[in-house]
Length: 41
Image (cartoon, rainbow, N blue to C red):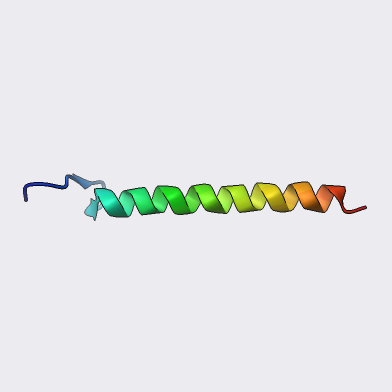
């Protein structure tokens, strides 16, 4: 296997990156939800 390094549990770098992006987006969404929940009085 030359080219993309395999990381952790057999994921390609692209897959790891997608997981990272997804978790960041999920965290961002949760934070925004909290913000708007708090200001909706």
